[in-house]
Each structure stands twice: as structure tokens, then as C-alpha cells.
Length: 134
Image (cartoon, rainbow, N blue to C red; front, side, top):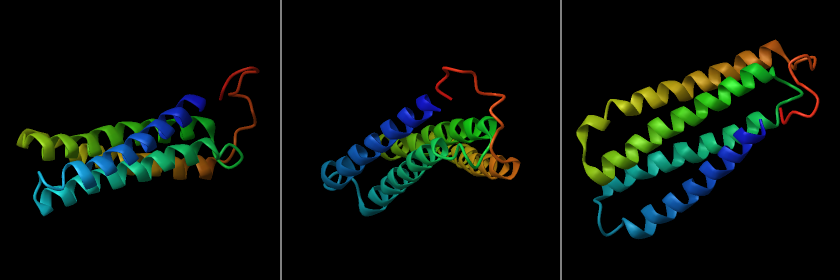
């Protein structure tokens, strides 16, 4: 889980940087609609960066296997959803449009995996090896 927490923190850092870039660097380049679309990508990236950090803190409530699945789906979903939005807005490449819903599906599946993990409850420690970062 340590790796996922680090990735979540990096996605949050990148989200803040991209938010600032959008607000200051793109405001004179993009029209209001494109800027709003870019902001949606930043917002969802930040939500899911925080979700990845949350997953790391749920050891007492949720299964490790399902927490890892949720974190991985949040990472993939953030890259596909927000990444495709950024590229679509900045490059105008329309073929990226269908990638965005796939990313959204991964984000939804991540939340579903987290629900399953909580339903299954915390592990009894059998999956965690001594000295591991899990």
C-alpha cells in the first residue's frame, strides 16, 4: 500500500500543478468551455488522488486485496479519464474522446472494489508477510 500512497500523493501534487496551469497559463489560450473541461479533469484527478490516500488508511476496515484493487483502478481511471481530457483540450485530438468514459468506468469500478473490501472486512493478517509494506 505504501506505493499506492506515494502515487496518490504524486497525483495530488500534479493535480495542484495542473490546476494552477489551467487557471493561470491557459486562461488566455482556451475558451471558457475548454477551460471548464480542463478543470473537470483536474477535479476528478484530485478527488481520486485523495481516494488513493484514503485506501491506504483503511487497513482496519477493508480487505487488503480489495484495497489494492481499488487503488489500482483509481490510478488507471485517473490516467485514462483526466489524462484523456487534458490531451483532448490541449491537442484537439477527437479520437481521445472514447478513452474518457473508459477511465470513468475504472473510477466507478474502483469505488465498487472499495465497497466490496469494506463488506469483506479487514484481513486477519494472513495476506501480510512480516516486513512487507502492505
